[in-house]
Amino acid sequence: MVPKLNKFRKHLSKLTKGEKDDVIFGLVEAALKREDINAAISEVRRIKNDYYLFLGVRSIVKKIIQLTRKSINKFGGVLKHEKEAFREYLKELVILANSITEERLRAIIFADIAIAFYLIDESLEGDLALRTSLDLAEKLKDDDVTFEIVYSLVENDLLEKAAYTMSLVRNRKKLDVILSYLALHLYKEGREDDAAKVITHIQSDFHKVMALCKIAAFESKRDKKKAEEILKKAMELLKDIENPVLRFEAFIKIAELQEELAGRFRFS
Image (cartoon, one colour):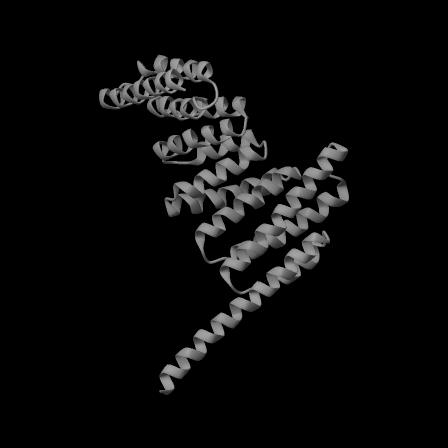
């Protein structure tokens, strides 16, 4: 009975620790509502649970990004005293981020930290954080993590850094797949020019065509003429696909969408 009792006590201890970290995270959120970043960081230092540590650090970084954007919108740039304070906060957050054992969470956090550094014009620190994030993503071989990194950069209007990120990703096929979905996300948000820029970074003609097909499928629910124009562009790229199997696959996809588009508006 004693071994089982000890095992139960250990389990109970873990639950208690988790509840404690949950309470601490609540204090972090309360501090951030007051815009007291220093207090929030002090609270995060007490967190032991990996996931709550991730949430705490990420919440603080997001707050720094929010306050930075607020200053940029109001004053055209970050004020000197804010920049100095944010830089010191971010350096502390890098240390806390490094203590997160789950590599997937650490990769996401470092991408956020990179964005915050870029917004306060600390490009070197931003590049170091971004490289750490990408190295972890490549090690994990996780498309979702890489997608989130690239998407976060584009979402924060850091298109040059997004392009830099793309150049660092070694698996070109993986990147082309990610970029095709990224283009669709941007298009859905009404950022058509950004979506078009992303598509130009896709090296594979097959994935360029598939990206246009995804966008055409989305647009077909709203504007038939526009969807047809997008499919026309996809058809023009079809001849550039060297692999005959992939070229045929892309042709079938375009034909299916054209058929669906004609049927949808014929009977609607």
